[in-house]
Image (tube, rainbow, N blue to C red; front, side):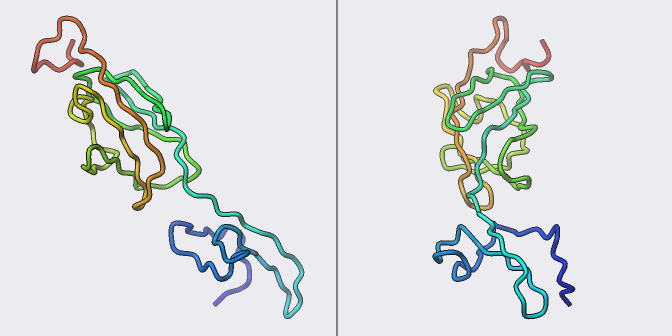
Length: 156
């Protein structure tokens, strides 16, 4: 039963929308028509943008927050436990995953830079529902002076 009040109705743009109803059949601009009985009383357009990630926020160790801009490079310290704690995008829901050297993992999983990127660094692609929404490069910074192999950096 549709009572005609669709205010606040969320449109899941990740699903395949019917392009035949879009302007010029391109799937980017859709009309919204308000009617009363058989009379059109208003019309406006919804423009659909591709999902775009601006940056990720990574917590390195216990305190340091690092912004990872899409298309940029970020330095993370060898041996420090890292976790993605937030992101800025034109969408508000995940799930987000990342792909490094062909391996996909959940973005919420903790990691260390050397596990993820290796000594030369690596390109990280961020994916939402099968579509790449951004990528950045992780550069592994040298381990802190005095850190012995096998010792957690956070314990110093």
